[in-house]
Image (tube, rainbow, N blue to C red; front, side, top):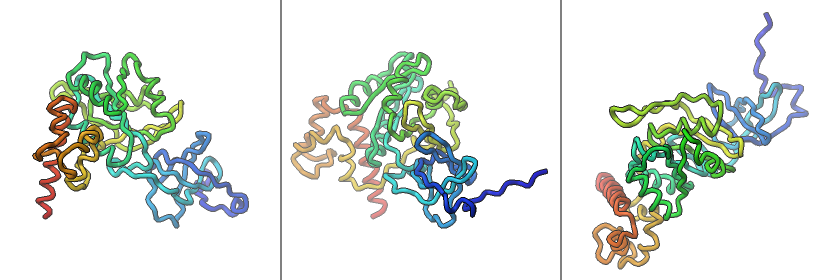
Length: 309
């Protein structure tokens, strides 16, 4: 019986010829970090003991290459951003996956998620999955109004494979976060984009009209066409980010062309006189339901302010 091989983090015979590389952390599992290098080579790494920073999925790191496809993380490179739920670094694109029908899109959830996306400085892309099903009123509103707001809206079907190639092009060169409610087909979409991932699919409960989330950890999956995709448990369970009531309107880009014409420069578009945003809602230039969702979020922020004062 041969002795168990030790993990050599700084073998003496390699010190003089160590090779350093930069790579992307795809996942962290049981104390090991799996880092992808330039040519999609995957290296299993430990962390050098002197490193104090937390290393997350999505972090770019510098590693020292050892033998047998192993390495040591020497340092974490500067981050562009960090999401806390889920914990992932350097994401640039959020793919908001909704079902065209069964379950119908919840526009309040859509607007809360868009707020969070803009607040984190990320780009949104709305994916209307199950395009083979009959249309729903919320899905129609998303295609007609949200697309006019400069948001990419793409219809796909994991059954017919419609839109999958177009989605791959959208993800190319991005670290994309897959988000949305349960039961809309996120796992099935992941299986289409990354063949062989063998994720367990989920069914929608006929009783409550939604599925149960099955993904347990955050992992980045490299796409054949370039870019990376993460599944993100918990991202659709959203508390409003900490902000003052005056800030909320700035995360509704479709309000901005109108609010410059409000009577008051600090107009909240709530109960003020001569509000150009409220006027635009009456004239159907702004989607009424989106405005109502804004008011509900504004009142939520104002209630928090009263509780903390």
